Amino acid sequence: MKSISDEPGISEPYLLGFLTSVGLDVEYTRAEGNTLFFRGEDGEEVPVLDAAGGYGSLIFGHNHPELVARARRLLDEGAPVNAQFSRNSCAQQVAALLSGIVRRETGSTETYAAIFANSGAEAIEAAVKHAELDRVLQVQALVAELAEHTAAARAAVEAGEAALPAGGHQDFEALAEEVSRANAVVGSRPPVFLTLEGSFHGKLVGSVQLTHNTAYRTPFGALANRARFVPLDRPSAVGEIIAEESAALRDIVVRDGVVTLVERPFPLVAAFLLEPIQGEGGIVPLTREFAATVRRECDAAGIPLVIDEIQSGMGRTGAFLASSLIGLRGDYYVLAKSLGGGLAKTSAMLVRSGRYRHEFELVHSSTFAKDGFSTPIALKVLEMLEADGGRAYGIARERGARLAEALEGVRADFPDVVKEVRGKGLMLGLEFHDQSESSSDTVRDGARSGLLGYTLSGYLLREHRVRTFPTASAGNTLRFAPSIHLTDGEIERLADALRAVASVLRDEDEKRLTGG
Ligand code: PMP
Image (cartoon, rainbow, N blue to C red; front, top):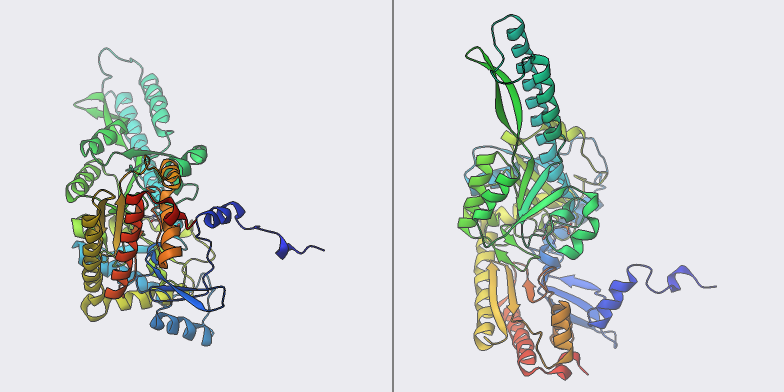
């Protein structure tokens, strides 16, 4: 009888088939630092330089000894992992550290409250939900205030202390009824979220609507609220779109003895979300000027700004927050990836105290969030980042500069193949020129389908034992997110491998690329 384990590909068989087709279907058996190992046909371990760094979740590399020791001790000591709804002092310490770091880097005088989650997208959804709760509570307060004003105006009219406006309704109740109907129409409009073209904020039901990539987003458009995408190359669009998405309620008040209608801004935009360096969009740093425009326009309209530091945060760019390097301050921050030290799944969203709604704590939770395993690991990660006056940030900056220099060297040797090197610190990308006219069938077809980056990654793995990937939504850009322990030798190996890729593309060498 056939057992279930004989069935081919029960788990994502199509994806596995794709990985096989480009030579990326390797099963890794061990990991250490910036190296992954698989077993070759002779049973020997084959080391692979991991430049993809768990897509940015390994600021200290695979299985860092101090983090492994912490994890081991937790298990050896029988630490309670799932003890929901109890005091968790590690979570408190993590939250306090995160708040303190954000304050230090941004100069904020407010504290930041932390809500824990399990993944990046989940923490984005927590931020979205919190922003919506805040908006709904604002709307409720506004509606209650308007009702009070209407009652006061009604009383003034009945007492003969206020007149109805000339040329309008001569019956207060008819006026109140019309205003109430108009306000109900505005009040029932669903919220809108603003984000940027090229953005990636996750793939869950809500967060995928904030992810610009149409293949990910559009099949699920009916499931969640509307987002509008602001073009990155036109800062004036920020204000224009906010103006288009503005709405107002009518407030009935008495002014100088006359019943008067006053427009009150209605909060329709629940939040503006952005990445300070777009990761999946192709490693695209926001400019200081664009960031300042978003901050100014959000402040003017009372819109909270959610800064998604899931990929750029946790020290990778040379500061804890990449946004702090461009002088951008958020009302919310979202962190994940390296927060779990490569061992635990955890994420957190932080909310500035002036925006925080404690009501959220009673309506949002997860069985696994803020558990007794991930929070002590996160605490250890933060202690390691902050040790010796934040030495790790300096290393990320220095190693990043060295890596960027090496990548620029590749570009200088192959300017006809390599278009640009972008990013900050250890969040770097290398974009190739369009290859859709290549005489190599594999290169041309790959470029036209947007999958060439995967073919190049397969080549790098097979021929050079280097692991990297294209970014999710910009297939022409290879990503590099290694740990801060990246050595000069590893940088050299990576640069040599990329030179080989570039020469394959320059020579349009189908045979070398496919190994055929
Ligand atoms: N936001 C950003 C900026 C990301 O880079 C990612 C993951 N690549 C996410 C959100 C989603 O995180 P996760 O994969 O943990 O859901």
